Structure formats: C-alpha cells, structure tokens
Amino acid sequence: MHEDGVIKYRCVWESGAPFTHQQLISLMIWRDRLHEAGLIGVYADGIGFGNISQRLTPTSFLISGTQTGQYPTTTSAHYTLVDQWDIRQNTLHCMGPLKASSESLTHAALYEYSADIQAIVHVHHQGLWTTYRDVLPTTHANVPYGTPAMADEMWRLFRESNLSDQKILVMAGHQDGLIAFGKTLEAAAANLLTLLASEKGHDSLSDNERQLA
Image (cartoon, rainbow, N blue to C red; front, side, top):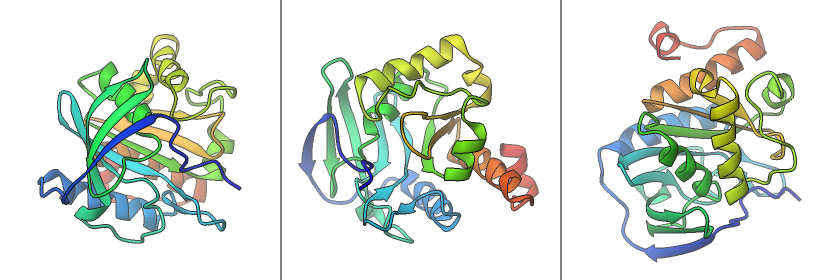
C-alpha cells in the first residue's frame, strides 16, 4: 500500500465552516486542472495524492485537505487554513472543514524560506519523477515526506542547487513526487504542465500559460 496521505506531523485541527476567501477560486481552478492532467488523483488502493496551496498572509496559507485526491472537482469544503506551525517540534495548526494535507509541513517550510513563494503544488507522476530525478534539484532518497528532515532538505537545495531559478524539485524518497512553486498558482502549475507536455511530446499549454511558466 502507498504511504501517501499519512500525516506524519502532529496535526492540531479545529473543525470549522468552509472559507470564502477569493483565493479559493484560483486554488479550485488550478487544482482541478492538475487533477484532469493526472497529476493529482488517487491510487488503486484508495490513497489520494497531490495537493495545492496559496499563501494568505505572511504566516498563513490555504491548502487542499488531506485525502481529497479522489475528487475530480473541488469546492470550498475541500480546503483548510494553516495558520501556525513549528517545524522543529513537528507540529501544525489548521482550521476548516478538513485536516490539512499530509504535505502541509513541507509547504510551510517553503513559505517560511522566502516571501517570494506565494503558491505551491505537489504532484505525482511516475514518468516525470523518473526522467527528472537528479536532473532537476532532487532531495536525498532517505528523507521522508512531511517531516522536519524534509524541511531541512528544501532549505539545503536552495543553498546548494539552482532551485530558486528552477522553482521545481523531485522528491527522491517520495515515489513519483514533485513540488513546484512560484509567485502565483498559475506560474507554479504551468511549470509542471510544461514538463508534462514535454514528456508527452506535445504542448498542451496556451501561450499565456507558457509565458507564466
């Protein structure tokens, strides 16, 4: 069985009503497009994969909830707010209709690293993972997802590779996993869709999306 979807940090969740923030519109649009492209979804054993987030304030972000990969389309009921975290203590606080994604601590680490990062997408794709492992910035294979060690790996890649320019990385220790980020959701998602189009041998991007990538 896939390990994806297992929350490895201590999640302090306050159940609450769905949010109505304007940012959810863009989150839902891009999350659903990535699902349509097969980059977010669910494995045969029922375990979902992939998540998407957008910074709300300097110290908070909206993110898709845990185990939402099964849904072809999403609503505001599938997103939650992360407003506190402590990477060293491996804890995270969220509030909303669902617990935050199992990758939320990794998202938090990236937002903590740079104010320029405003949106993050985590996807799964076997072909991209195989093709770009050790070609794009790549985490060490012995580092598990959703842990303080993965946060340290993110920061190491910023120091030791061209991750700031590439804005996309491969998670060697997380089967099929890639992360992209950017100043907008459009830019982060288009970066991945560009790779996917190249992998398939054709261009599925509009001119506008290609410029954003």
